[in-house]
Amino acid sequence: MLGYVVPDKPELKIREYELYSGYYCGICKSVKLRYGQIPRMVLNYDFVFLALVLSALRPSTEKIKQERCPIHPLKKRTVVYNEPAVDYAADMMLLLTYFKLMDDQRDEGGLKPAAGLAALKPVYKKLMKSYSEKGIMIQRELNELTSLEEQKCSSLDRAAESFAKLMEEVFAADTLTDDSHALELLRRIGYHTGKWIYLIDAFDDLEENAKSGSYNPLLLQWDYQPEKEEMQDFRNRIRQRVEFNLLFYLAELSKAWDQLSIARNRGLVENIIYSGLLRKTEEVLEKGNTKDAKPL
Amino acid sequence: MRKETQKMQNPYEVLGIKEGASIQEIKAAYKEQVKKYHPDRHQDNPLYELAEEKLQEINEAYDYLMKNGSYSPGGTTHSSNNYGGGQPRQSPEFRQVRIDIDRGNLGAAEAALNRSKNRGAEWFFLSGMLSLRKGWYDEAVTNVQTAISMDPNNVEYRTAMNNMLQTSGAYRTNAYGRGYGSTNDELCRMLQCYCCADMLCDCI
Image (cartoon, rainbow over all chains, first blue to last red; front, side, top):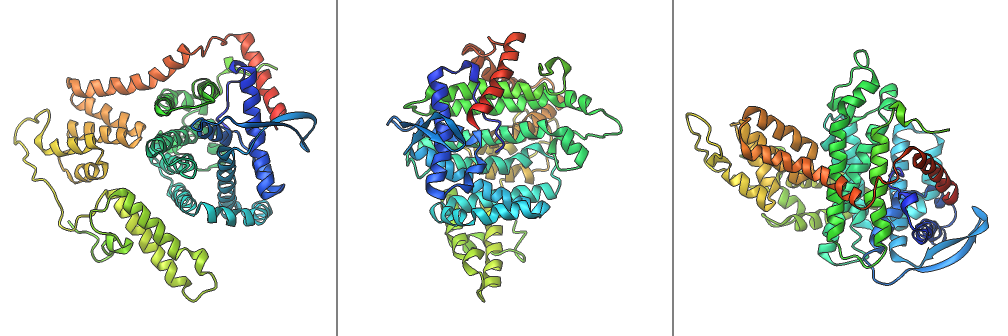
């Protein structure tokens, strides 16, 4: 979960933007109210998407407050509160953060992950109590992911599978709905969101991974040989195929979304699905091509 | 058929469910068992090692059942009647595979394809269709491409390829239909960057 899932802000209505911010701040507040200050540092846009998709299935409108907070002391902000979808997204965010820290500790060691783990430990224990089954499944997929990395798996689909399955589990919020059809669709949304995040991140980080020698399935599947090929040529060589895959995920994601019965926030979620994700896709696909150099 | 007999116990027994249990039942039993033997519960406890061993068995059993769809000690292969001469377009060997893919019995289809020795164009095509159902779109394209290069005149393979390309294109068309891209000139790009920066400042 890396913050790729964002809205296309210029295309949002102002009230939609306000609401989006309200969900963002809502997650932060929800964490603070239930777990204290420290875990608030891990906030991430991807989980706002999760909260929005889940909230869309619930007919009641969200409760909104205008509030100040220590991070933005000057201006009052819109905050969505008492919203089960927001609480759920916050919980999943913390659970994944804890697992991520465990992973970092195993890979790099050092004080930073250890400190984070120590700080989050009580939260983690609580979460594993309330979501024990989900926690087990998520942990399982993460272990699988790590072992595929260790084996230097050269298949994109195989490597992305665990992360996609993990996200599937995260989106299937069975504590919020027991409609099995809706849960199935949420799983599909989660699965394809996971695949999209995994691939776009892999494509985005090609240079970095090639330089540091860290694992990236794209380098292996399409056989990147630094002495024979410039990275930009490699990018151009695989771009079309990567684009096909990314758009396929988004096509399946949007198909599943269209089949859900949506009670609210349609415009906002569809801004993300049809605009935000596509813009991000094109931005990352064009990476390195000079015409896309950022102004200023 | 039963390759792992010495190494592995019957995975259904390990998970404590009856043979032929559905995926839901397998998952439920797996979660149940993992909870029981989770190392967190047996820390500083003489049973720790035993629990760990048991957990590994459970994981193996679960992996086995998930990867193979089902575990059939007797084996239920379909006799393959290979034609001696030219390859038929839809060989009877793969009839069951096609049915399984259509019905979503992906484990059974995968097992049958892995068993098959007849790896012609149709095998690649069906592997592609299986990947497609699994959500492995990249492998789907590779396999169907191979099928097409082996049998360039086959309409079924080409149609499948076109459908895949169309799915991916349709999303973009849909997005354009909703007004995406109308703000795509240079000035707007600059504004957009400004907005992105603005969004970060606004929210974080």
